[in-house]
Length: 205
Image 1 (cartoon, rainbow, N blue to C red):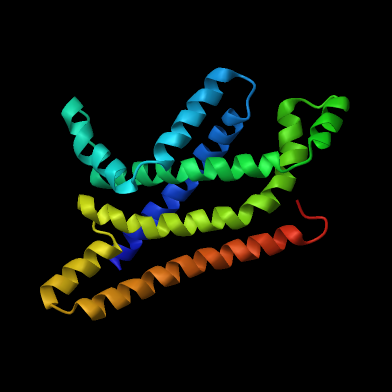
Image 2: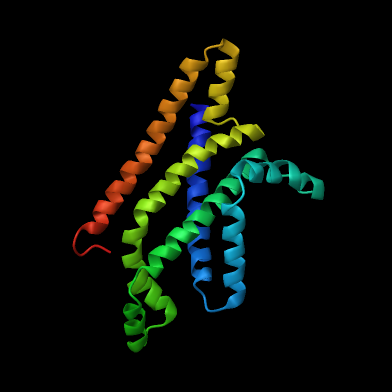
């Protein structure tokens, strides 16, 4: 249970932070200003094209070489957040770009600001499109959280692996571990499906 609580904590915090970073980076990638657009593009390209485990060890071991010492759990959350945030950036960007250009022009004709256009017109429509792939990313993040065990975070996988080694019962322990992760990801999928259904109800935004 202690390992499960830690896995849930890491996954929830990382999901929330990754969503925030993803939305900000997506809006930056769509910006007319070159500076935030180039920064966001570089962020996405770097974190999507390097292994998560390597990123974990950069925070856990590499940063110590320049005098930055972070707790293992902080390193895990940081790695999961930045890695998943890069994928969420592209999901949000694609969702926004899927909205017809005429709607941007109509909002501009009505005198709405860019912020009002995004908040009142574009995002309420885009969210219906991005919910399913967002759910998939949250599920992937939960499964990827098992990698934090490699930097001594005592999550579910860490506990399962140590139990398997101590008792020499690898099959039983790893099957239980799989069932635990299936339950966690199943709960996420259920919430995503409920939220998606809720958004499909006429009159909901």
